[in-house]
Length: 443
Ligand code: GDP
Ligand code: MG
Image (cartoon, rainbow, N blue to C red; front, side, top):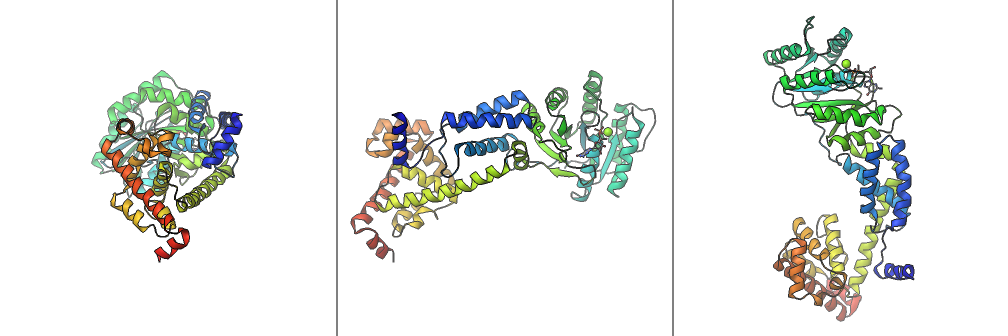
């Protein structure tokens, strides 16, 4: 029975909501997808729980399957968790000599990434860059950095090698050389070990203390998967990390380590290593990585298109209602949302001939974006019954709504007045002879 009732309400309002069952089924598959992408288990659990509360009750987009819609919600959640669409990937290197310290396990790609970043900063940022290797255990590591500096061109140099110095001594010498030589940026490429040990951490912490880096980047191999979490946690405990770099994103891995590391540290992912060569470096892009982790790019774009389509249909439906002279506060809320999306008053009112006066009423109410959001908040603080029948809104209800939406009773009154004006317009247009007349009026 309740299902039938639900169906009736769906028909009444023209919409439904994602059920707990729809969501749970889809999330079971997504859980597997995330684990396959090497996202750490605790991170997966947390994330799934969050998405679940968000997805249940979400309005169903017609023409896509509930499972597909859940995938899109998961995707949006991933993008957000990875730092959002407009994540800041730039390095803060504006006070010369700005020190950038590279940390990470041996073989993670620190030295290679140092070369890539140096090339990028010297070419795109026109910076003068000094590279210093603090890896005293492997003489070849210093050589490697010197060769990279050569490949980067005139604006990048390597600190001359002096045998027998400790990492802390080299750091001090490098700082001096950077100041004297007028360098904009100094990279300190530290030594890593194959696994985390106390000595390495103490050494790295000491260097950070001496050099006070503006940026301390943790470099990690995207293919290490589950281990990435532990690595990130331990480094984050001991070093003033400012960002993450994930290397070997050109490999087969789905890049789940990115999500895990970000979840554990809360640090921004700044770059992705995508090859052995010096130009194999990309600025981090949350959407791209989210798509890769999920491995469901096609479905995401399918749902995005369907959502656009639904907005268009909703607009059509609303215009139809308005033609019939029905216009309650639910409709006003829809209208306000639509206007926010379309970025102005061009939307629905424009579809309705003869509605110039109502449009003016809205314009005179000074509808900028913040006002729109506030008005939407007011309407969402109302009960269903109140929205359908604004006459219910007596003084005490208005007070409650103002408190609930973080506005004032005056704000609530203003909104109701605007609604009345608009609803009045609709009625007038109707009684004056319907569409035909309205069309004439509009001319
Ligand atoms: P370090 O010990 O942390 O300094 O690591 P290296 O910079 O010496 O890199 C170790 C190996 O990984 C080298 O053979 C690099 O060419 C390779 N490498 C580093 N970054 C990438 C990457 O983004 N993609 C690929 N395919 N290889 C990389
Ligand atoms: Mg190295």
